[in-house]
Image (cartoon, rainbow, N blue to C red):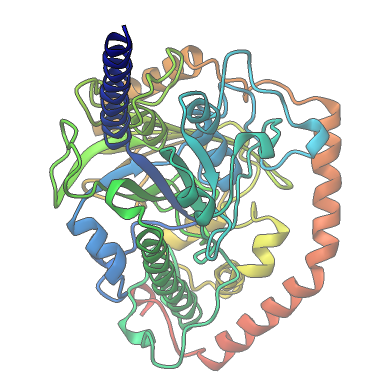
Length: 500
């Protein structure tokens, strides 16, 4: 009897050990099969990196990331300004669909998300992932969502060390502000002004060249911050199982860039890097370049898929990696409404070749629609006005001080700077009519809420903001104008080539 009891005891212990080992193997297998994903979000950055062809800047860390990943060349934000764009990124839904499209609401006027719509942070939490919004340097912990949300409930932590201590896989985002204005000036000789090529819609002037030099200097500092982030992943032994998405919320912070529906405001870099040794999803080829057309909404949908989370049925992003990837896009869409004191109501679409835009509010030019903040920080704004008064602008530059048309159509293959509006060109009538129809269909099918009438509370809030902003920046606006005027006077013999 005693011998039988001992045998039963030994058998029980053996079974327990077998069960524990099986559980441990499965748990470890699950941990390996469930990757981490990190979003590195730059601000106000066009594809102006060295690996995208800008040989003036040195971006060693981002270039290396691209070599061991995929670099995408046709990626467009849902808005050319941060808050609406980040709102769409957080949900995988157009900001106009979920009713959170202004930049930016007072806190008490922010709308609630529609029933059933959740953020990627919430969805990752529900699937057993640790959700993080990194505040360790250079992370800002930025969300800037235009809907009601208890942000502290959305994220489990803000620090790498907490992630490292936890055995859960994670989804993390890290926002860096380096390419946002105000720029820290380039050091003397860092970018010789005569080496900088200026887009033809800006005056080719020392003021423009200096502004781009400072922007390029901020890109190089951003690259160093990316190196710092990659070192943090290594330090905490998180690098071997972490998929990295590097991208920007919208295009460069220049006149006709940020806020406006051109490639310069909407096209963003996107680099995706998956560490060696991890399972590579279908469609991912190491060290390649992809020209497929993507919306930043697709970053959200694809991230969910890589995390093993089925994207919600109503999500508007498309999965571009994996066995469940969606059909490639033929067109992407973008929208803006109020941006500070300026009431834009613009919609645009982009195919691989064409950009079509429609402006429902247009009692202003690109330059005159600048907010007080932009007037206080954008020297090219003042340069355009001064040279316009002197009659020194070319046709492409003159368009920036002329009332915005109702419609714009550009053939980006023949006109990459989007300077020749083809709406009145009979050769493009078939294209124009087709894209008009595509736009109308998207507005209807996406449930665009931004073309309705704003409430009196919203109108009053933004009007008040405009008055306060004008007063707050008045002195700085005047100071910058005088600085630009002085440089123009010192270089009065400089003219655009077309005016020589």
